Length: 115
Length: 111
Image 1 (cartoon, each protein chain N blue to C red):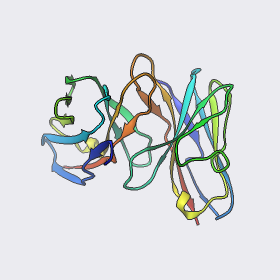
Image 2: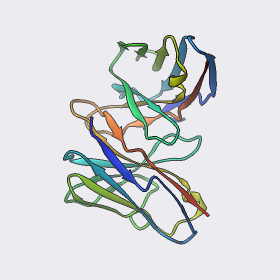
Image 3: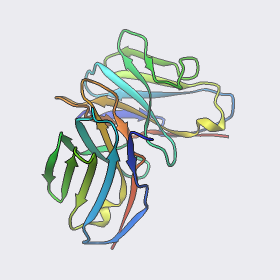
């Protein structure tokens, strides 16, 4: 399994500001995923980030709100822009494990609170 | 209807009990089934992984999939306080398709 470092681990932000979350993996991976986890709700995929191409966003998520960078095969960032209290959530970085099937491995998450 | 349904609990059991966690799903294309364990303020960690129907055992944990009834189960034997966490079931159809998660069941094992 990959070791995934995510930071910050938590932050409290003011409405209207932006926060960039960093995700570092200890091995090269083709696909990285960003998830949102809201209380009482299932993990929701925000976007898939492939190195060298634009991120692919899921329905309900747009690049202007959640811009993603993927400069190399071990690193990605997710920015939460123009934040509102509704953006308060846990944000998780994830990568696929080896072999068939979708074995996802997750970072420790970023707990974001927007005031 | 959600593609993966899971009772959110919370579920509270005494130490040593057998725990049964369950999910149902609606997408017949799902072939890969996972259970994740998530401790407070941590990311989910892959606990069990099953392909198609059948059972898979790993120590005190048994994952069971019944595709005919679209039912996913996780059994924990001799539960320990360290098993206290939120358990998430998940499923996918393979081929790098999106993984769909349940909402998670919060388990507390009381010493």
